[in-house]
Image 1 (cartoon, rainbow, N blue to C red):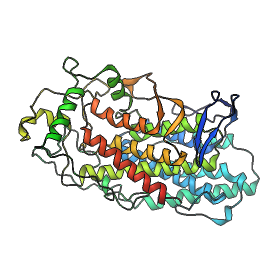
Image 2 (image 1 turned 90 degrees about the vertical axis):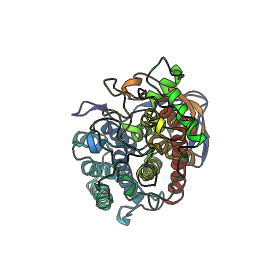
Image 3 (image 1 turned 30 degrees about the vertical axis):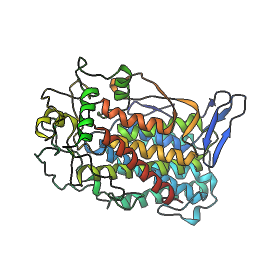
Image 4 (image 1 turned 60 degrees about the vertical axis):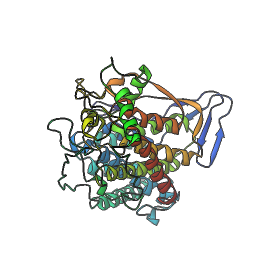
Length: 455
């Protein structure tokens, strides 16, 4: 393993991966059976390596670089550059931006190209972090090349990284148009003193795969005066509160709430958790895949995540309803005009910061970003592998400090996505419609990306 200067252990899994007897692995084009005897596979996949580096880097980001949209954008940029580089050596789909013919067939240049593509993007997209140790480690672990092969790979990786960074310099991600905070019933307003609305213009960012942020805009949330809204408010009031003496939330639901949160600095945020799950699946459950297959998987997945974030933030900020969080809704329920809701000015969500203070994320509730990311991730994984379910138990972990050591087990992508979405209700920061429509939105984005982004 490689120890980098920021203290995280990273490296290639160049050893042997042992899979359980009879494990079935879903791969692009169908499902294959692993032989009855445990399989030992050597792995040396630089695509996987750089996505591990990416996940670790998410935990070290702060401020504007640590927002969900920003981390998803960085991941998409890196994986697009890597994909275009790999695709230039051996065709695995349509180009995203460029496909230099001069690199075709230079298979021994593959690792050099991947390393220069990933490194070139990361040092531009995440400039406050130093990736030189990771780059040096990658180059040390690469197979030997001739001078010509090295030059071809280096030139290719630098070209693809420059292409995507040049394009995204003009993607509107730096827009800072002021956001007007409303004060009418239903309007979102800050829940933590001194914390402004987070990335209110992210819905205007140029998407990577879909045409524009509002392309799959969901229907408006339930009306405040209706029975559906009252039922949803009362559900999160009952299951998402911090006061354990009044909540009906079970111990398992509390664990679910914390497991998927990853809202705090030091965690890898909602998109990063899905990258971590993908890394685990690729490393341990897709042993026969190579860099050509994983490059396409990560490119599709990362494009879908980035676009799901853009689409979700369009719904949050750019529609006629920028919906208040349950925290505000419950405290001010006596003002919503709904006879089936009752205000509780002392109600707080379960959601804790590192010191245990309760908070709601600083942006509107509808739709849930976690749910949109989860729906997009599951949608890509299902379409890429050809199946939603898998014949093994996936033990998933988290880095959220309030779920230290927790492992949850799943047998389908949709199960993970749904639990992720519903966790936001138990955490007290979202209504059910936020979660349900977020999942739908994410899957619609995934369907578009899978069908059109890379061919």
